[in-house]
Length: 358
Ligand code: DAH
Image 1 (cartoon, rainbow, N blue to C red):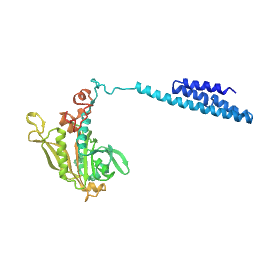
Image 2 (spheres, helix red, strand yellow):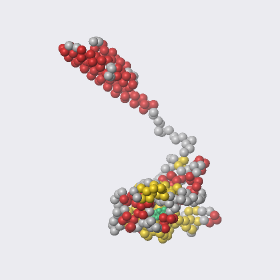
Image 3 (cartoon, helix red, strand yellow):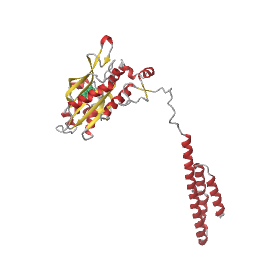
Image 4 (spheres, rainbow, N blue to C red):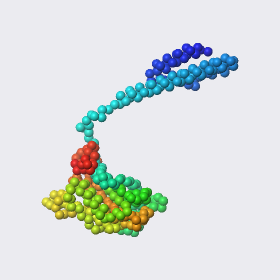
């Protein structure tokens, strides 16, 4: 048998000289692997006399442990220095100024959603989500729009083929079904906003088959119309950046709210010039109301204990009014020149404190 001492010296020297974890691994396989040198010596034990085998076995085991330990120790040392080298190599200077040539712009739809979320988030509402493909029950029935209700026709619904769990599937025609999902999946109180895509079969300068809405829902004990008005007046003034913006609540009808209202903001159209916040003309911007008790009950909420208000508005419309965009279709044309003109810097994240009206 090879002199174990010289083998040990040779291997320990090699471990010390290994300059990376790969070299170390090769070394480990050569010494301790299935066909490794120490393993081969161990296999030779079988042919020895009992006395000789005992002594040689002990010596080999000791060698095996010693080499394994040396490899482990070297591995740790190498790991630390390899990590250090990588950190050094991948180091970035976070104090460098941003590149002035950055071209990416935030789309006005995203910007407007961020603004709405910033304002209502500050009031304590958090973002909720629901699927774009809804079932008939969530999109209509639970919202007190029964099968033969005229509101269904107004929605110009895209129905999907087939059924799911006995329900017809639709591309959601509004974000209101997120109210239903929120109430079904939690316990009151609720304070949520749900921005998202919505779909209706309609296409012209003011309608697109895919558009965006944001829904709001607040449900608690003792929630009343005063809360609704306070929340929405404050929202309109913050969003349009006009502190004394006139806001009017006009009686209206929605199946899911009772009473219902439409909200108008003051504007002027004098001399073909449209301006928000001045003059004595009005412009409708959103729908709202006190959640119909039937809707609460459809979601298993005790309407004698809880009341709520809800609202819904079109994101494109808000963006068009605020940023002076005249044709809805341009939002979806992916025209870079348009985006450079109407888009927003990625670093200008809207916030109530930092500013919403750049
Ligand atoms: N879902 C309505 C629509 O798409 C908008 C709306 C009106 C939502 C009143 C509401 C509400 O939550 O209370 O036209």
